[in-house]
Image (cartoon, rainbow, N blue to C red; front, side):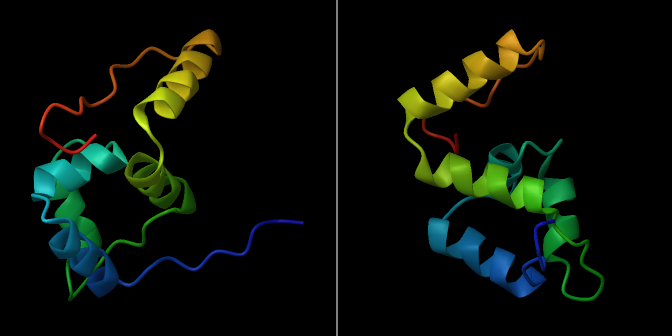
Length: 94
């Protein structure tokens, strides 16, 4: 059975950014976006881009999972053949 998913409204994503006290760049890093201009596409009140379930999952995983669990996931991704450098936790969003 396929997943039922309805993307969050732009205002909810903007509220989350404010609640976390993050910059647009930090939010982009949490979602693995190219930069804050990409994050703004999801929070534009006039013409927001719908956020995919996978991107929302990535965002929430970075907010909820600890470093050890994230590192295990990254290691598994690398074993599957992925090459990437995850964002750091040094004072910025994971």
